[in-house]
Length: 221
Image (cartoon, rainbow, N blue to C red; front, side, top):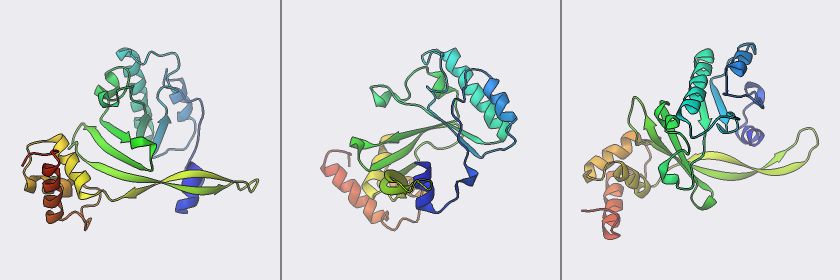
């Protein structure tokens, strides 16, 4: 995926480093990273479960300790540490395991891929010091990746941002606050859209979307 993204975007891979086996079980690996000599702006730990072998994901003390060590890495490199964690069988209940996984972090992003299709939505489920109704839409695009060493071509996916439709944005606004007026929905949509200048999200488009939602029983006039 990393190679596919860089070939697709034209970026260099020189600013990316990959480690295997880095653990948040204790401070040993954080101490190791102090010796690396490089600092990175973004660290992705994929997945939290793999990075916490031997810890109980349902234990608040175990998971709070792992999160604390992620924060120590964040302070060490002055970077954003992103922990990838899965939901349980009931996705609506959020991250599986201990409640400290949500309670002890500043930000929770929920990633959904309906029907395993090509569209992905990313919503802000928690933000310690800001609004929590922002959302971004993405599309998964198939690309061919060439192995520079062997010349072998294989398939992969890249993620590119897309513009959400007015109905989708209205549904998100009402999901977080059901009693909004049409004007308030429009204000919410344009304020928290990743692209506020989206020409498709006009006030008339919002009104039309809300009207269709009322007719379909999704909203109350």
